[in-house]
Length: 292
Image (tube, rainbow, N blue to C red):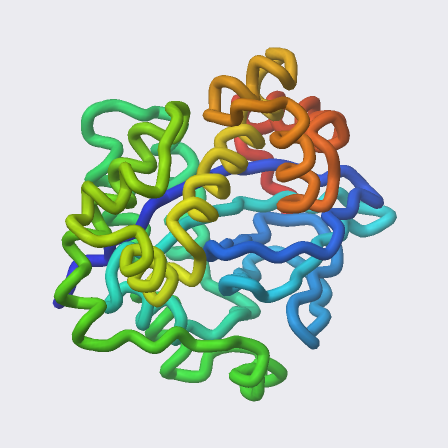
């Protein structure tokens, strides 16, 4: 059995207040949404679902999706965002059905344990997180194969564009892993394409081609996406000024940061903070609320 290998960008447990809407958006990473409780509506691709407790969704790269809390009840969710680091993991994740109507109690507890472990964050956390994530994904795969999901999702293959992974990807995988690792460790510093090409022992042109074949974006786009995700975390978790946050995550210009952030999320950094900060901090650092 191979090992699941991902770059975990974001894990949160939050409550979207009544009538709260996350407008249509898409991105180049995977996003898992688990409904702890409450009610709402979730759309992805051409599908629209009534959101309720124990449902799980996976939004694959570049699939447009939208999340809405109902007018009467808040929507209580756990959210994960990640990239896949090797072809085997990519193929497995991509094969999952995008919607499971009822994950069952064991997986519900695994999702909750995932968030609790992130909050605990000690020396054992990385190994425990890896084990919990493996449990979630392989259980999801089992349900996909057994057909224990909403029958409406059986014809969704046309919504997604599958990446082609070949032997050349496997050969250059180690070099690309080094580039990804460098980006995650040094995203706050100035990084040029030539720096990344030197790490991979490839020409800049060939690195861009190989990197895009595997991850769907160029190395610089990947870097900017990582910077943007970390900026979102700082906007929600801290009261630092937007200028300081832009500098901390590696943007040299507040103007470029604001423009990139809006193109990436659909809203300005200021608006993102208004929508996410208050209820996110209070809820994420407190106890998990169970509305079911």
